[in-house]
Image (cartoon, rainbow, N blue to C red):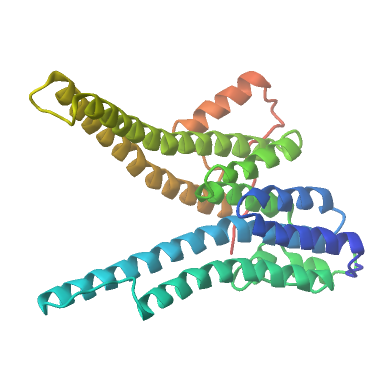
Amino acid sequence: MNTATTTEDRLWAVLAHLSALAFGMGILLPIIGWSDQRRKSNYASFQSLQALGYQSLGYTVWILSYLVVFIGMLIVIVVMSFQAETKGKAFDPFSGLRTILIFIVLIAFFAIYFLLPIIAAAACAFGKDFRYPILGDRLARYLDYDSAQKSEAPVWLNEDHEFHWVVAMGHFSILIIFWGMLAPLTTWILYGKRSPFLKFQSIQTLVYQAGTTIFYFAGIFIYLFGFFLLIVISGATGGPNLNSSGGIVSILIFGMSTLISFFLLLLVPLLHILAQWAGYRVLKGDDYHYPWVGRWVERWMVNKTPVSKDDNLSSKGELS
């Protein structure tokens, strides 16, 4: 099989990798590149799927690592502040060398995330077979990419695994607030009519992510509404007065809004964890159904378009 790359192959690969610089908004571009180039170029398809994995799965790892580093820095600051207080010394965590170190750490994490796609794009511009650390070789084995490239006969990537990878990355992209929904939406638009499995999983993921996003913004809105109402009533009465009905009502509303928003915002990370589990199960070959959402979407699809005996909402595949 001819493994030489064309200008079109390299262009799609470069665009797919550089789309990571859009910080979430570009996640649809690797899916478009894969859709356009599959069964045309294994090289462009693989690079597009790899770029998709970096923007979804890689973003998940990056944001979690960022969170761990932030918590670690916070713990160190609290410990140093406590030690300084016991010794009767003043402690300012954002002065002098500490400020510089914090700034370097924060910038370094941003630089690492954006530097790799730039290197990938530069390598692909010259037709190199770029592999992201850890991710690239595993994905190549999962898609049977290397064996397809070495074959003299036309051999394409493993279709079942392609579909499972695209679906799983849609699940993982839930951490990209709002823009992560572009992954399942784009997959639904491009492949909804070609694959019942991709259609079901894309719609399910889109509905689930939309619901999670609504919970997130609803929690923020409810808290701000209660806080705004407290400020308005306090300003009208000269401060929250427990001896007045207005003051009591404003405090009660603010307390209730705080509790509701806290519950909703606490629920969001749990929904994120479930989405990560869904992505993992799909990579293992499962036709994963979210609780309630999956059954509702499946019934909606059956009612919308009757499913024949030959239709199948699942496919097989396992990430080794």
